Image (cartoon, rainbow, N blue to C red; front, side, top):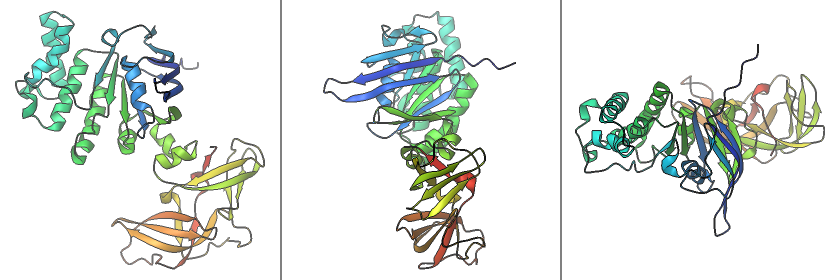
Length: 372
């Protein structure tokens, strides 16, 4: 029996937002987000990610399209009536209230019975492990603690969806790294659905079940983190998440078990032991991650200078020594600089040096095929 697909909690249909000055911030986006997901919208400044989040919250009205949450069209539903809570960058805690009072505030606004307010508040304090600090005020807390209180205030209202707007941006790096795991633990513990906006690639890769990469109002790709990194669909995604050496190429053969891409720029043939989308003579791009490129001073045994395969010859122009690893900057015969990262496992190993002639090779499965 086939598994019944999970019903989306959030469905975004052909959603666009054009501001009065004519700027198209979000352009015809379609997206499903599922219950209990930690979904991240990742993009640079001006990509449209924050505008999309604000439309989900109801703070911006779409120009076109629909947002459906748990089967209900949100078009005419104001922010305060949506089953959504938003956690802002500033955390927006009331300075004159204790931590417990801050968490209670939204529940009191909803006029819940006192018994329910107390029960939910205590449960939220327990989730964030701050019962012992309930009587403190925000200025008596660290940045990470204030962030947890802001999250607890969202969780106490038990919304169907929690929106996070750059939640870790105000924290220093060490605390940010720690809070990434704490946020994920809380999300998994409560079974909540999170949609987070961030410009931090590491943050999105660490925390998310899926990532939507945004650029110029478009969703470039929506995939799990490992798929985004290993199988980007475009040059933009390949270079936005990590760094890649990218070469122009042309499909010369594609079959069930083998595909060949010829690249004049790389001066090699990229041979893949798999079928790829496309037809013969179609222009395409290939990408290689620095850590997937092997560097050696010795010529490969099967190297043919007239028709190299999965191998590029070059000269070391620069070396960045980073302790546990080194990054080699190699000028290829085609004139392009390609980076290769090698681990410094052996202290006295005969590593390539400046000016050395080297050969760059890679395994077939590590070739990324890029269509735009």
